Length: 272
Ligand SMILES: [Zn+2]
Image (tube, rainbow, N blue to C red):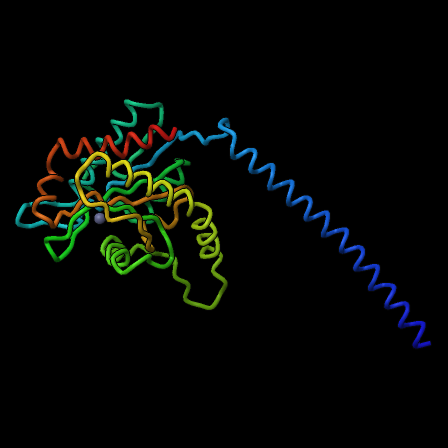
């Protein structure tokens, strides 16, 4: 009796193995086919994604001046708005891409609302414009960031802390131990657009580097509140240091502004 049962079990197990082998080999084949098809589609020029809408975010505004250079009378919020308006004009004059701004005057928009605006417009790209600042006046150069949970280095963490300063508008904390579905979705979104954001940041940096003689500080990542809910590739550009006397002068200079706008805008228009 025991012997018979043993053979029955052995028969079932061996059949199960045969069945799973067939299933898994089919799955493997299917996966390989899907991968080949995906590669074929991605390598085709016809499917290059067309950029239709861009949302530009002039950092800070209203009661939030951003970084301030008191001795030169410079406010980050005014400079970012100038850059954003110029960039909007440049893109619209040189393409059929629609451009929207998160603010068009000197008023405050919460950090999370800025990406809500981009999501509502179904933008293909989100670009937040800022000026950097450091207690050491000698700090200089431009850099671009994309959003990541952990900062890429100490300097990235410092810049994120600076830009997240009006962080009172972060409504996503859970007080109990319930599963935070929003956090899971945010994580998914961040991963979905990570590669696109990194590529966009790198190409913007490369373009600025070719047009201006500022130090390129690299592409970095950190948890920027203004980027983290974006449902599209999203980048934050720190154009130059407002705290540096030479770069402070440049940031006010129309010619410098136009050159940077041309560098960023040219890249975005060319990506169409
Ligand atoms: Zn800023």
